[in-house]
Image: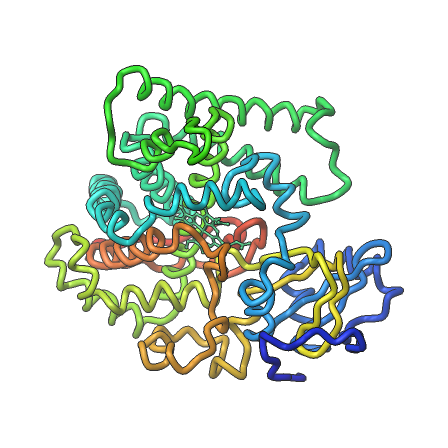
Length: 459
Ligand code: HEM
């Protein structure tokens, strides 16, 4: 494999050569293969052509896959203004509108500044109690329903994460509505997943699938705006994210956020904030089940909790839980691919990336780059000791993206992951159900294919 060591700040050189890649006449074959097995397709491209690969994409345009950490840094940070979000995010915006994940330019900057304070570490620290309480309720429910039968841990983690996100956002309990809410989210996310296929019909065509999606979206919007209206009317102040969005005023006009923008932001936070963490937890437990030494270490660390729910200050006593979460996201990064569209010509790793190219960076591949990770396929949480982290380039590991569009909910997710791993491991041992394999379903997020069936045993 070629392994150039490009600087992220290389100057532009118009005479830069074309990056290596499969011949152009493979376009259709490439598109079909990429759609069938995207992770395998990009992995083979990387192994065959090196750290930057050019794929003929559509019409005169190409897609570039960039794997080396310095190339990733160039795209996400050093020259980020040249790489706005493109096609995939437009598709997602059918659901989340102009929320933070999909918006761009002035609107994005304004909204990001507005939401940022709610995600400061100090604010997030206050949510440790809500997280621990929600995990504790799930474990009490497991206690009340002892079973030897396999259950779908991926689904269970999804419910848990949605409940935590709901409580943190609304300060109220989604419990009663959780099932319905979960269902509406699923219908919507499935629709978006299908819409990544460019041959699907737009929402303006009333197909049964489009109608189902639009109904689900209407109901979700109505629910969010219902909670918002209630708050505005009764004047009660809450200490949660929704309140911050409601109280926000435009610096110039003094106007409050429109209902449309408010619903987009809340939906964005729910979407971005629950499936990602849930998948990371599910992968984490599947890896622990296959690596009993690591599982034993986590169980023994979790004993410091003495059966009590952790507070924010306890997190410092759970370093191994954090390293397990980090390592799980190295091997199975929930957002496994990020894509951008080049505005102007650029040079990456010594190769020309022309304007209007699609540029892909895949945490899934960079996290397995053998120049930065020994035995990349092996699960080993010890890779994340502070010394080892400091010895690697920053973008060798980027499960939360990077640069100005870095994940807003990073601290929230770290805390939730650490708390859930430690609390679950302190009470239950999870084993993979017979025949359960670790196959991936790479959609918007990287899910375990067909769920993750495990058994649980009270420790
Ligand atoms: C393990 C859990 C999580 C992972 C792996 C994850 C990953 C990511 C990644 C990779 C991006 C950047 C996407 C890109 O640049 O194309 C992102 C953005 C974002 N994430 Fe997360 N995320 C997680 C949890 C959360 C949570 C809990 C929240 C909120 C409660 C959240 C809210 C957001 C938002 C709002 C953005 C857009 C930020 C912007 O563009 O300004 N995420 N996330």
